Image 1 (cartoon, rainbow, N blue to C red):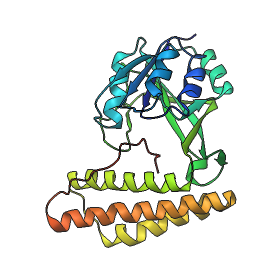
Image 2 (image 1 turned 120 degrees about the vertical axis):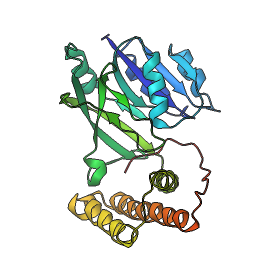
Image 3 (image 1 turned 90 degrees about the horizontal axis):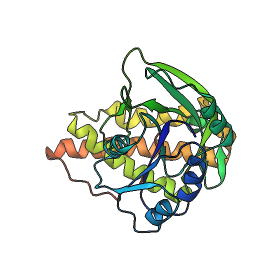
Image 4 (image 1 turned 90 degrees about the vertical axis):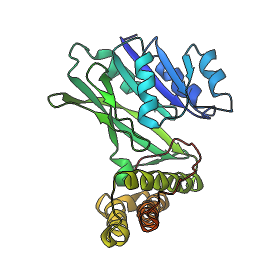
Length: 266
């Protein structure tokens, strides 16, 4: 084991969280699970596998990840979602690290899937994130959507070998549902920030994002899956600005009720 705490956020992830925990146990003896009201067997699976489980109210992605960081035993944090599974190459790389510089963060390559099909191209195929860091220097931005790590200037980044396998959605229907959920969340966020939905954002940005994903990033090489992702990205971009326009036109922020699901990032 290495002096790293693995922090996992969960909500109704009984179908996969056991696999994530099994890999996490090869990394650390401290696995913290922040559960946000699961109604399936997620909590029982986590406790049965020796995790420290805390059930917390939902305050947003970044805020809830920070709750887990605060409860961790070690200062070094490996942050995972319940549907993100480290592979053996990454685990070996982690065991080789000398974690002596708190001003260092580690960037990890992601492999993303629709169901069991790996998406190799498009934006998904290029996905990578900083997920290993020292909590004395780095925290999550307390955002409802698209949580981002607040990394101070001067902190060094290093890419490490291995991958996190992200089983984000079971099928295209779930992809579309999560995309709509994120569009609503983003619209509320943008409204709160005083942003406007210009004609450029409404009509040009969706087309640009489609072309970038499908052509420039070679999404078409993923066949049907690449087309579905690019099309969903188009719809997501248009919908979030359409909802923002409606909010701004009404001069009143619409309270958007959304189902709490951990969604993919675009």
